[in-house]
Image 1: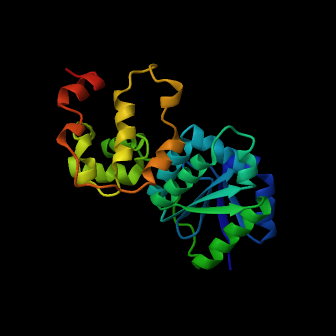
Image 2: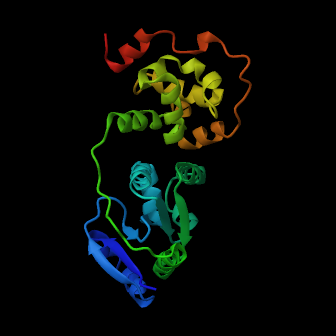
Image 3: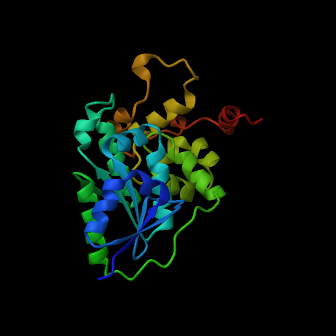
Length: 259
């Protein structure tokens, strides 16, 4: 079976071991400048390859989820390959493992397949195996980045709130129509949107109402806390008060710099 893999030209220069093993497994390598992903496989599959330490760094700086959204939008099948010992790498960074677990669950929730490999040989073999299992119908096109739409910006804005993510952001927009209306009706989230509980609403409220620079060390919202609170369940939805919401549009407009 013919086996061809397109690799980003920058990845081609830095991932010599992966490229070597791809060729040893009988696949052709075609370097191209890719806007999205590191590798493109037949049947419209895109792969982002992360060494363990880079995976952790991309969680901290937020790159991982942006890259994940691009993969999902561009390819029929999106993969993130984590190469190396993730938990050993975690021991060299001041990042709690719950942050990593939360990020992994977010990727899965987005529809991205996460694959672990021990080394470059394993990464190359996984790609060859994916091609064999897909039936290899060839690579028909290379996706390019499209300009960001207002919808993209709205989802990205709400997704940046603690514990929300792309799927909850879209659910909020379907119910409330705009990010502004969603924030104005924060107290209604638990009643009108699935998989949102009071703990999550409380985290969002803290982010929206705490004055910049005034938080104490023990009140800083961490990813760990968000993941822990969200996983506590949806809670009782029958005892919510209208007063739990941000009181009026003026508060939000003031927050956003409006009149």
